[in-house]
Length: 422
Image (cartoon, rainbow, N blue to C red):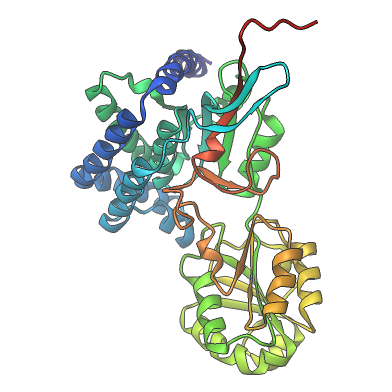
């Protein structure tokens, strides 16, 4: 009880500090935000040894607790990943400032001039698991968009997240800004999350990033609006008129480039007319890469070594080297399958037929639809957003990879010359 009281008291203090800091971040100029983030980018590179040391603390514990290889991969920071993290922060710094932009302006018959102007949301709570690079992405995007942020990472990445926040804090203090612009939850007690999700007077938006269980819990508990996606059940459909070589490369990349992330392919759909030509080559590469294939009867006839798929496999987000495969009779059957089992995240078609591509593009209702490209491109950095705050499969406020625009709201500014309403 005493322990719970201590973290609750600390969190209340943090909430008050972050709320006050949000008014400071909202007033930062474009040039100030750019300089701060450029300095953070440089400081991340200079702090490489310190970051890796803290990350190793997390990895040792994670291995002792038996985390899967996919989860360990998400947790691991390497010099290359730290450089990529710094590059992402630098990319955000160079993006146009999304705040104070006049989206629309019009004049009414009574002479009033009305403008819709972009503004920060305020205080954003981000709850995430495993990937410590999320800390840098979210902190930089929130600063650039004039928001303050409270970061609550997973227990498995506590030390990694803490050292990354300390780097932002160090740079902010150089500019005489309180480190409370970026709040960090110092406890791993899960009750702290429930407490935060009820602070609707202090926090304006919640963004959970992690597995389905986490996101559902947040959505069900929160009194604050939540931007979410429950699952990343992504499909690649290989059409009868696909270029077989391109299809193999795209499908292999979509599954194997990084299996433990939400935009990795989980189900492959193959047109029956190309299956016997396409599947043996892809199957060989998948098998050599250690990927387990679970297929229907038609797949097993072509790939006898494949496991038999269950109906549950086609609605599963494996987040591992496991792939469900099904042979379909045509594009309509493929789209029906996606509609039934998909999560609205990212789905792709590989085809040389422009008509089939248009049908798929127009009728598949996912936040990202790929034509002749890997699902792994469904990412804020790849879309040119600098980084992403998360991916939304909702349709209200934001959808798909969320960059700076997803972290803004707007207000109306009405300019008159003494008008009164009669």
